[in-house]
Image 1 (cartoon, rainbow, N blue to C red):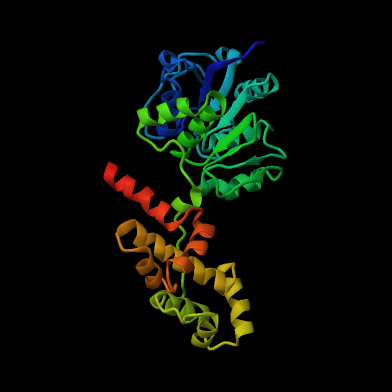
Image 2 (image 1 turned 30 degrees about the vertical axis):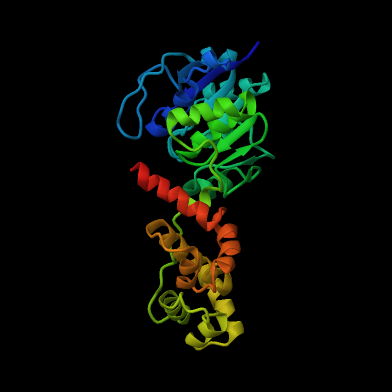
Amino acid sequence: MTREATTVGIIVGDGAPILEVAVAPRVFEIDHSRRGGPRFDVRAAGEHPSRLGTSAGIALHAPHPLSALDGAGVVVIPGWRLPGGRPTAPEVLDAVRRAHDEGATVVGLCLGAFVLAEAGLLDGRRATTHWLCLAEFAGRFPDVDVVGDALFVDEGRIVTSAGSAAGLDACLHLLRREHGPEVANTTARALVVAPQRPGGQAQFVEQPVPPLDAGDPVTTAMRFALEHLDDPGLDVARLAAEASLSRRSFDRRFRDTAGCSPLQWLLHQRVLRAQHILSTTALPIDTVARACGFSDGVALRPHFRRLVGVPPQTYRASFSAVREAG
């Protein structure tokens, strides 16, 4: 069967989050034909023909049956219901497999990646999903190369994205890849979003400190560290001394508690502190760095970029834009 590149099929799952369901229709409904670009035929098909629920309790009706997607050159599975619920209907999995086998690009937005994995399309490929479900995704589908810190992953005719707003990034990327930057930029302007966001989802992941039990030597050292992150002389040797342990014993006990080395944890806490200050103040980068125990912004930047995925200035600009929009 012939599949048209400008026909976009969207499979709406029963119980899906309404925001994720709305992303692809909103992106592809924009008409670019007056500028010589594409005009898309968007076909939303329900997982089943009855009324579809959403996680917000709002009912939806998809106007097309799954068979209407047979001519689609792009098939999108938006955010799906939470894993662990009822299995995906065989008809949906068949439609996704058929689309891929016939040359369509299939896209799993957020938890839609679970549907692609259930269909067996992600085995041996890189893929991502919402950071809250990465561990479950990796556990359920061990043959998938799970990418934890990515807004989206492009594997050619298979694209997956992280949660919610990252679906916009994936759809804009697909527009840019298939129809050129002007089409993607025009769409981004219409949606009032950045045409291409830098970095990955690590910049948006909340990573709290592990629970700290009173009386444990590692807990004592952690509490001391969190109270003295601005001290540039704070290092692992000093933390071991606070715990009244030898350096070797402290390192072993710390790894058992936190799952990483003391140095990794300390750097991570300093970067987390920097993230908080950058997103809530206008302090100069050097001042932010010193408040987190780094000598200056030059010393902060490589650690920040490695852990967050973007430089401090870019991170601050992202959250400033959010505040201004609000």
